[in-house]
Length: 452
Image (tube, rainbow, N blue to C red; front, side, top):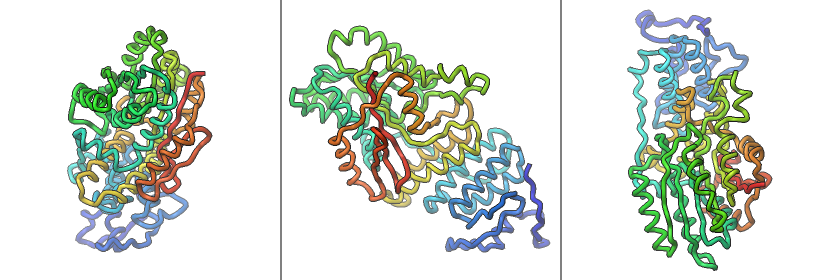
């Protein structure tokens, strides 16, 4: 348990009311014009190096780590002091680093409240933020703001169009976080095929969990809009939604596809499995206790899902997801991984949304939901379990898929799309895969697979 080992002299009239951290901050003159002063090592923190400058990312990350350790060891005094400092140096309307830290501050407060640490603190710090339910027009505009989703849409659509060339029936099974926002562009491209438009069957895995971004209309209403859009492009579309849950590996979707798949070869039907930032919600091995790890490595929901998809003999599987690792059962490891990845959306938002705008609030509320889920929850309640590209590549290979890659024409489409956005976005090829980058850091990966 961490405790303060140095005494800080307090003014006589404030000895009971002011915490050591508050005195330290006052002594270091953190001024209202946000000029940051150089700080000495924090009293009581047993570290070989200084935290650096109060307010820089290294200092904020280390404060968050110390706070997480204090909460986990039930050291309410130390946790409350650190949370109070963070509350003063990380306002919700500050720069991108401050807003990022504020998101983690919210999450740590929720975690402290859940396990009984710092009960009184939550009443004094108001950091509530609600996610927004989008209209279909709002969501379409929201997705277009950044390549975060458009990158995957563009890469996947190019690979799908090549794979289904010549088929008169195309069955698309959509596991997507963005409520089919990818589909209109795909339909538009399909309608221009030289051999004429095919019949399109669209099956949507309707996740029963409330995952941001959230939509304010039902899947039935969404399906009607998509069918009408396809008709306007002279494409006949059949739409159905299968209510499902990621918590059981979308077993309901898999079972219905398995039954329907018995007649597919006779029709010469292309089967497309489109996975856009949804598969990481399927529980993975660390969800269970360590004594079951060796058994579930070969029988986890993610493994079973991919093997079930392989048994359907799909024409192509496209997998797009965020390139980070949030699977550790150790809170500090998870916090560091999330902090060093989720700075990216906060940094990018400053390039396209003004401070105080509604869209910016919606955008950052969704990031805060992700941070809270990663930090404040455990077990099956912790849904955000990102795995890096390397891990998904290995999972796909183990399920008897081989990488099919992306054509030069498809890569050029992605590059042209990125030209519409800020200069910090980039594209790199990693073997046969594509990776979206921000200022050189991996953000989202896109992979395409066919059965062995």
